[in-house]
Image 1 (cartoon, rainbow, N blue to C red):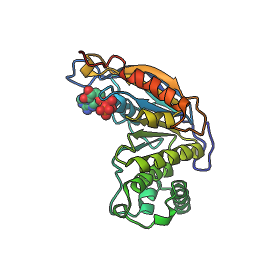
Image 2 (cartoon, rainbow, N blue to C red; image 1 turned 135 degrees about the horizontal axis):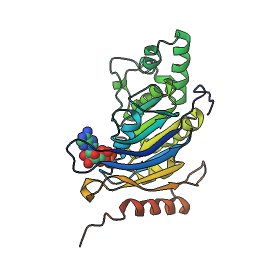
Image 3 (tube, protein in one colour; image 1 turned 90 degrees about the horizontal axis):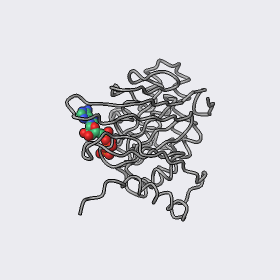
Length: 266
Ligand SMILES: Nc1ncnc2c1ncn2[C@@H]1O[C@H](COP(=O)(O)OP(=O)(O)OP(=O)(O)O)[C@@H](O)[C@H]1O
C-alpha cells in the first residue's frame, strides 16, 4: 500500500498465476505458465525476442484479452476486463486531436464524474508531474512526439491507477527524446508510487528503468509457447549510468538470456 502526492492510497500488487493464452486455431498457446508476483510500487520491465508473448501478457493484465489458463490478479482481484485501476500507455499516443492538452488529461476524471475542483486538481498535478504546464492549452498536433507521449502519460496519471501498463511507449521516439523520457518516467514513478509493467524491445531501456526485468523466450517461431526464462533483479540503485561497467555487465547478461536458444543454425 502506498500514499503519494499524485495518488490516493492504492494497492498495486499484480499476481500472475499459471497465466496462459491459447488463441483460437493456433497449434500452441502463445503464452504458457507465467508466474509473477509484482509488489505495489514496483517497476517491472518485460523483454524478449519478437513473438514471445510480451504484449499478450500485458494485454491480459489490462483485461483486453481473457486468459485461457490461470489468472491475472490486480490488487487481490481477478482481472475480468479493463478497469480504472489500470492505465494503459501504447506506442501511438491515442490522444483526442480535437481536445487541448488539459482537456485530454481531464477527460478521465470528468468521465468518472468527479467534482470540478477534483478534476482541476488532478489535471494540474498530472500536467506538472510531466512538465507540460506551459503547453496546457495546445492541441496535440502542435506538440512533438515526446510531448504527446507525456500527455498520454499524464492522462493515465490523472486517473490515479494502481497500475500503469506500458507497451513500448517510447518506441517511436528519437534516441535523445527517448532517453529524456526514460529519466522523467523514473522520476514520475518514484513520485506517484504507482506499479509499472513496461514492455520494451530495448534491453538498455529495461535495465535503466526497472527494479526487475522479466526475460521472456519462445513463441511459435521456436516451436513452443512464450514463457518466462528468468527474472533478473536490477541492483543498480536510483542513479543509473548506462556507460558504467556494472550497467553493461547486467545488459550483457540479459542480452545472453534473450538470445540463448535463438542461434541461427550454420
Ligand atoms: N489476437 C491474436 N490472435 C491470434 N494470435 C495472436 C493474437 N495476438 C497475438 N497473437 C500471437 O501471439 C504470439 C505472441 O504475440 P505478442 O504480440 O504477445 O508477442 P510480443 O513478444 O509482444 O511480440 P513483439 O515484440 O513483436 O511485439 C504471436 O505469435 C502472435 O502472432
